[in-house]
Each structure stands twice: as structure tokens, then as C-alpha cells.
Length: 233
Image (cartoon, rainbow, N blue to C red; front, side, top):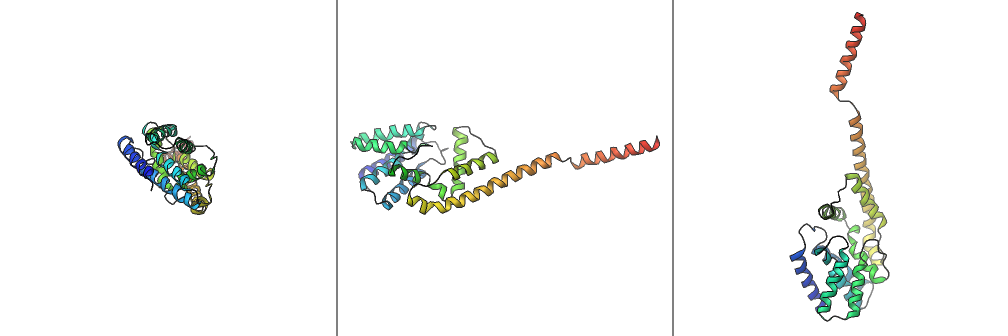
């Protein structure tokens, strides 16, 4: 591990420890480490030059630091933090800009423009190809409720997760080979989860439409009284 990587990791660890809310149960230092390690693995698998791997690793280390200042569009804040720290270490300006571009590419809906951006894309989304996806998704849900005020009913949430899984794929050979099969399995499991909650809602609605036993008894008694009165008449 190079000196700049060691210094950057120490800086980011302290920054997140001091300024990141404990309510960031998904986007925290653990996630940062997972992305950082995955970037390095894919970079080596792709036989990239050491400098390119280091750029990827540094981008991963800084990519979520912006959450200390903002939730929406945190990538812009992450770029500012990365640029300021790396500049203070007299890191080459050209490489700083490359690292900042990698951080910016992690924004939602951004299409990766080159191999390095594809790698950090796959590393940042590796959780969709792991068995822990559903647990991670619930942590993300808690974050959204806390910081964005976004609440979803069971059907909305399961449908959102299924849409996310089906529309997100891995772009590198390593990502497809390592995480692709589990992503497909997660899609099938998510389909079952959606059908289950939909079925539950349908049953609840059908039950609500049926009169209760007390009402049915009242209807029968009223009907018998009506027949008796008719007979007397």
C-alpha cells in the first residue's frame, strides 16, 4: 500500500468517525472499505497499471465522504473533499482530476465512460450480487427514511428493489463472473417477495369486503323477523 493511500484512509476514517451521523447505516466506512477492496481486486484482475489501480483505490476511499456535508448530490461534496486533501499532499494535479472524475461517475444514472469508471461502478454496486443484498437494502431504506423522508409501503418497496435489480448490471468481466449469478438469484428472490406482499394485500382487501360474523348474524335475524311478520300479516 502506497503512502498516499495510507494517509487518505486514515484521513477518511477520522472524518467519517467525527462527522458522519450514526444514522448512516449503509453509507459508512464499512461500505467505503468494501468498495475500495473491490476496486483493487478488479483492477488487478484487469491487469491495470499500478497508477490506475491507485487512482481507483483513492477514488473509492473518498467517494462517499460528501455524506458528511450533504445527502443529495453528495458526490459533489466528495469531490471537493478529495481535491482539497490530495492537493494538500502535493499529489499530481492531473491525477487528482482523474480521481475526481471517477468519484463523479458514481452518481446515479451516469453511464461509465471508460474502463476505470466501469470498475468503480461495479465495486460500488457489488452488494446487488451478494446474498447480503436484502439486508443491505433494508439499511438503505432506513437511511432514506431518516435523511430524505422517503417512506414506501411494502408493495412499493419490493417493486422498487426489483426494478433496481433488473435495471442494474455489472460492466466488467470480473463483476459478471463474481457477482452475476447471485444477482440473478436475487432477482428471482425479489420477485417472490413482491408477489408475497401483493398476495397479502389482496387477501386483506378481500377480507375487508366480507361482512363479519356479527353482521351476518344480524342479517339472518332480521330476515327471520321479516318472514315471521309476513306470516302474521
